Image 1 (tube, rainbow, N blue to C red):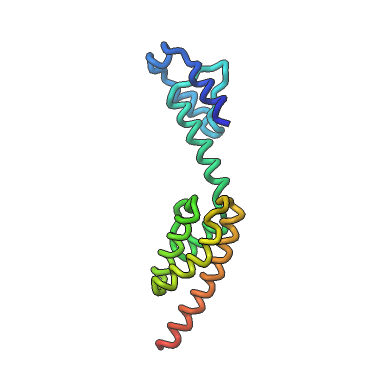
Image 2: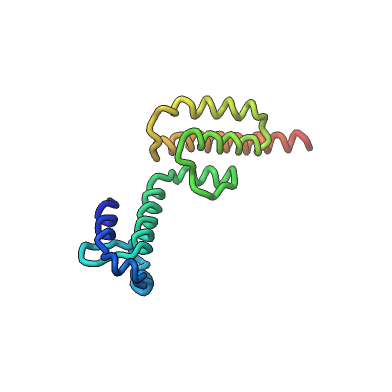
Length: 154
């Protein structure tokens, strides 16, 4: 919960903040653990922001589907974070499909069929897993299609 961190950090005296106290040594020593501020210590703005960033990163990682990360990495060569909304996940899939050599109309149709039924549901890791498991099956079908296309052209 971010409230205790923010509350503790606001307790820093104005003199310490205005004096620009250097807490970089303290932050370096605690870099292996999440940075937190207690009621007994005052926090610089940098410490508070680093702590906030660490917690947000941790929360972000908890909401990523490993199935989706694998699918987008293996088939679409996308290694950034998995999108956090159905519409963005759908758009990424459709773009990957088109770049795989399929007609845009086919990719948009598959995207609509797969994603649109979920658009009013909560975007959870379980739902991401379900959708990306379906996309894995499309990816395997794509690999077979590509092999057949290559053999037929030869």
